[in-house]
Length: 529
Image: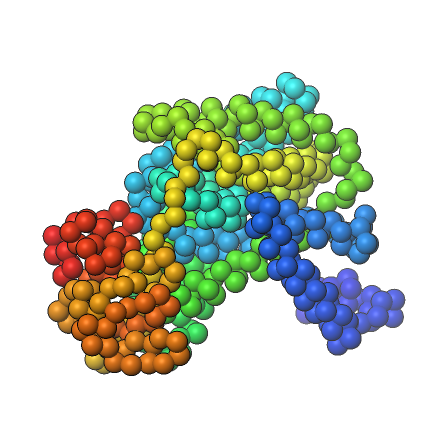
């Protein structure tokens, strides 16, 4: 029993120096948390209209609640912030991976990998040189800042890019890069924070590549095994599928980290594999993951806002602006040019991807690592990173749509994709597809027989304006209709592929070359090549 340690607060409570926590305190905490969530949800509408990433609003809420704000909450626990930040980042990466379309990422995978590795290396070197020679920071501090700000933020990139109609190659490259580059940056920040500049750089590169390989292998393996299990096991309630998906994604992170690999890369890849595996009750899973992602972002950003002390930022504003200018105007464009020119990426796309390297909560979370490690001037590093992220996100986020239009990279409105949900009929060896026809879908005006579904699939029910009926072959489908399609197991994928093709290309989709995938695979209505 001598090894049991009593928490300091519990000891103070026993001695009567501090009142114990009560249900009343819990009620007050729940009230504050619910109010913060409601304000944050309302603020999303403001950020979506202005084009600003919502992270700035959440950071502002945290600052207002802090010791220099109206809440006067004194919070300076960097270790707790780092732990919660890591947990939130796992959820955000999982949500981003679930929403990443493999058909869009696949062509951009080599370029995204080059940016996540070579681009980070260029960014760290150039930014650290600027911080050392222009701001006067010591090399260790300069390298830490260079590494911290070299990671593009997945939450910021996902939230902004998915509102801008960009070419699939640009979106796929940026989303994959933001999911991949957290892993090498974390390794660099930890290395610089614990041992300063590394004498044998090739050893560090070898460690980074090894950790990435381990994380990638575990993430892909867990993703495939999880997908196989969820597609072959009929759970008793649809609400269990989203929970299982998120649990599998988190398990990939934990397994990768325990195996001394990159847990962040593992969770992103596992989620991406599951997100492209046509799992049962997929819309419900996406909605659940999206909600968890928002909660993670709100909690993480508010906590980071609490950690900062605004009155201490004055002396670090100019250094932050100088370092940010070097990062935005020199390091990022140089890294993009070096990594993407060999892939013959047009200069317009290179310019946009240079400007779209959004920073967010990830650099601020990483800036807590030197604080926890006790690095000299670590508080100043945190302040510089905080100011840099806020200022340059204010500049880059709202101007991305304008720059895309100027570079003529914005795409026009496309036919809206169908919402297809699948529920397995395990004993009948079939699937029930629930298909929602949205506004803008070219399935509007198509007759049922013109869907040309593969043999073994049929439209069994149509729900229109709250009324359900069994359709005839000549029934004309309309926007807002919901269809129930029964498909046998062998033709399930071909049926969904055909439905999506008609939704994008209309009744002539097969002859026009429109496919159910993002890029097409050359199959006909029956799934044959």
